[in-house]
Image (cartoon, rainbow, N blue to C red; front, side):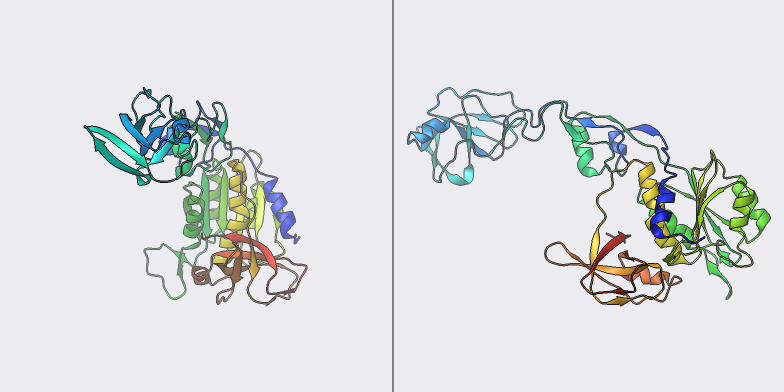
Length: 402
């Protein structure tokens, strides 16, 4: 039975499961999903921090009309806090240092003129000064005990720096799933082989595996011939996997054995065929206490699109990633698409002033035209209820290139 894209997405998301957690050193968590809230262990910054190389003064002295300050001492980053002995003087300070006691304002060297009198260094202020300027106040970034990284965050270089700052050496992250990618087809040969005229190299498996690497997942790729017994034998050996991503053999051809084999093995089929182009033959199901099965069409653009529209969102949900809002783009041309199908059209995204994205389709020859994706960034999702899509109208986009 043909179902619409919304129902297909809901069915896929109804099978979301938790792959569990593991604890890793903070240096090894880039690209992983955080599974615990991270709190600041102290105020950040932990002290009033100097933001500019220059001098620190007591503003009240400047406010009374004093513009020349003798240097008492130096406060560098990493030094214990010093105290100004006489508020009529100043202390030289370096970026990152703690503010000396009895000082409350920093003036950068660029706004000072240095002189020396009887071996005593002095600075004359030659620009307007505001009280408290160039000081990074204690706790202004985060107070002790404050949430700094919520659970569900994709950990990047920025988060790793914060983990180090709060002393979080071991981090709970989502465990990565075990994924098998299975390509079916007698026409497929290994990438290193020279194919005969009637053959093609295996490519779908590797584009799907590369897409999963965006989540840090290393899938294992398999190839099986169009042989019912061989397909069943391979599947039986992969029951320990969390998910199977199959490519090919799901349509209505004489050698499309996959639906029958999966049914014989006891898979609960949630849908077969979706009201969409490309990717209409998409089959989806799950085994009780076994893997979830994404059986994608063999046409390369179809499988690629289904991966970004269904497989990756499912995996992100399983990993408990808090996804950002769905991006939208504006059509740069009028588009007409007659069949009552949701159309996932490859587009090149062009940013314009104001942050808007303009979507323009590259030359495209259908779901077998994998090379067309080299000129695209995303699929724009055009709803099945319409056949005419006006230039300037906005629709969701599923990006596969940033």
